[in-house]
Length: 421
Ligand code: AMP
Image (cartoon, rainbow, N blue to C red):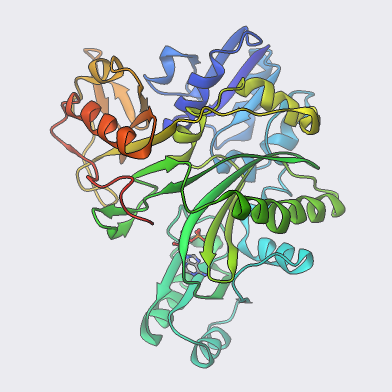
């Protein structure tokens, strides 16, 4: 089969690296890809936020299956568009992608299916939102309804912060995505991520993971796309995993199916493990980055066969196997990230790091300069991933690999795998 992966980050590098092993794939294409992905797939530069460009490429290359990495093509309805031209695709329809694209939509599903989540209300009016803040407990959480590149959530410690967050959202900070807001009860606990592979009816647990969102050691500084992750997380015991499947994932699939929008693809639940049990914070409708890197390096089964089983609605019979090893990834980012940073600084030593047994360096934001040097080309640049017997060994191994990477303009957290959030 000819397969087209969409995306250009470390998540898509891990996906291509994992798919490239499959004897069922005759040609693997990634659009637009990056220099790391180019070692696994043919990279073709198109704008994947434009459905027409994706469809043209898929038709021209006669691909049999398309696998989108990021959420934007999914929320843009690429799966529906591909089906219209008879190309199979792995991922949710435009309607089912609302589980990520609209927090209001997800809250409604939670209400209908009795899924544990934070109490919340939806507002499109400033005065009513402020009235609600004044009569509820602090801290309180203000969320833009739509996609806001991970920046649409504010945990307000006092009324003033809450009002500023409401004003910012209604004043267009997040464009249309913030014209509707949710105000939500603050949940206390430890966060974890849970991933399920879904075929519309059946969900099989892919693995769980924990990421490090803050930029600084000891969980300080602003939120980022993720500075590191490890899998599995000791916070999710088998019984908690079962609660998540039974009380959160399956009721969601049943409710979506009932509405005529069955969910096929990766369902990624962001959870708060509270004293009353796991509660859903949000859904994403694709792999997380950097969680993808730690999950896919642990999968023993053929990833492509698992994806085909989801596309063909035969997951019930699929047995997904994992290595017992722990995986841990450390993100190397450009100095200044998540704020302003410079690009095009030379990175050396990636091949040396990759030569260490148990190490795989995934490219997140790299490109080649005119002399074919690998240079930085984004905020998050590399994802150095280690697999080892336990988390301690994986951490030591990953930091050892980082020592081989020579990059003057980059930084990384020194405590990945050590903190609980
Ligand atoms: P979200 O985009 O909804 O995942 O929110 C981003 C981050 O904000 C989460 O990963 C949590 O750290 C935090 N967060 C969101 N909602 C809540 C909540 N109700 N209570 C506490 N923290 C929250």
